[in-house]
Structures are given as C-alpha cells and as structure tokens.
Image 1: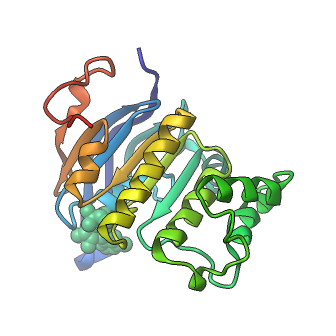
Image 2 (image 1 turned 120 degrees about the vertical axis):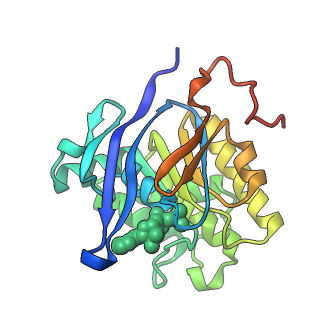
Image 3 (image 1 turned 60 degrees about the horizontal axis):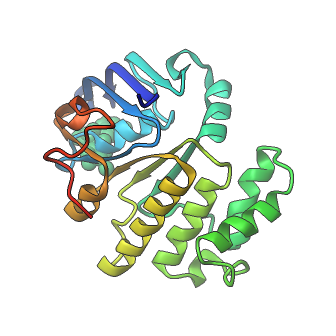
Length: 241
Ligand code: ADP
Ligand code: MG
C-alpha cells in the first residue's frame, strides 16, 4: 500500500479583511500518496492556487490540519516551516519567478547556498544540465525563452531533492508545444525521482496526464479520484498514454 505523503483534514481558510474577505477553502479534506501525480482543476477563483500554497506551507490555515510526510505543518513556527519547505518541497509558478539580475546558474545555486548546502554551484550545474540547459548557465532570465526560464525554475525547485513538487499552472505562460515539453520534463522527473507531483492546470491534456484529478469548486472538493487506491487506478479519470 502506498504511503500517504499529504494529508489535509478539514482545511479552512478565509483571506482578506472585512467586506473584502473571501472564504477560500471550505473544510477541505484530501490525501495524496507518495509518488502520485495529481492534477488540481476547477474554475478560475475556485481556490486552486490557495490550496497549493497551503500544501506548500506558504499559506497557513485558519482551522484544520495539514500533514506532509508525517510532519504537522500547522504545528510549526515560521522558522520551522521555512526549513521544512526548503528541505522537502519544490515549487514552480506560472510566471517562473526567477531573479532577473542573476544568471541561470546563480538562480539555482544561490538558494542552495543560503540553505548551507555544500557544492551549491556543482549541484546547480548538474540540475541545469539535466533539464537541457547546460549551454545556458551564464544567461540571464531576460536572455532566455519562456520555456528555458521555466526549465531554470524547475531545476531550482528540484535542486534540493524535494519529496514533493508543487506547480501552479506550470505551462500557463507557454505555447502548446513548449508547454508539452515542460510537462514531459515534469513527469519524467517525477517518475525518475519517485517524487510526488501536485499541479494546478487549466489544460485538460495536462490534467489527463496526471494519475488522478481533484476538482475544486468554490473552495470545496467537487470530484476526487481518492476512492481509487494506487493499485486500482484504471478508472474513469485516467487517460491512457
Ligand atoms: P484559483 O487559483 O482557483 O483561480 P485562488 O486560490 O487564487 O483561485 O483564489 C480563490 C479566491 O480567493 C478568489 O476569489 C480570490 O479573489 C480570493 N483571494 C485570493 N487571495 C486573496 C487575498 N489575499 N485576499 C482576499 N481574497 C483573496
Ligand atoms: Mg490560480
């Protein structure tokens, strides 16, 4: 039986103040197994990004529990949370979030150095080569295509060898073919590393490539392949390759 890596219980969150407050997550419970790939889908504004940020330990719950790989994130203080994140969770965003005045190599190496990892630049060079950018190490983000920038962001996310990779619309700013190549890279890395991948996407083709889809509507889970076990994943929401 697959080990559970993400367990969310009655997760509840309201964002914003007073008249502008929005009840974004309404007592959401879900569990995700280690090594799974999960696509979170749903209408714009339904709470997908907020749910991802909770899973990433970047947004705290008002009520409920979030446990990642046996660690209760809701019980950690800010320092503990930051350290846990750095060690266990990689994050990729739609708009890449690279630092413009750092080269590709520095974008990947500097966070490793800040986390006191030895050989940060060697690791960064290796990760960038693995994503096909061995010949772009000294380029700045502004000198790279969108697909190349996303590869740098993926190398940066993977460099600490996280157990969990979280991606919010990772192909949302890319053309169809480039988006497919980035998706190929994400799934290859997920499989090769035995890593868990949780992504949000509007692209039905990308969602269909995930082992399971979770549908979010108005801050609630509307559809969830969770009933199927890891060994019984031949059902409705899985599309053969
Ligand atoms: P999605 O990613 O599904 O488009 P989000 O998680 O970004 O949705 O947002 C869900 C809802 O919460 C939206 O209605 C959005 O306007 C609202 N929201 C998100 N962040 C905040 C915030 N910091 N303050 C107030 N409302 C917010
Ligand atoms: Mg979003």
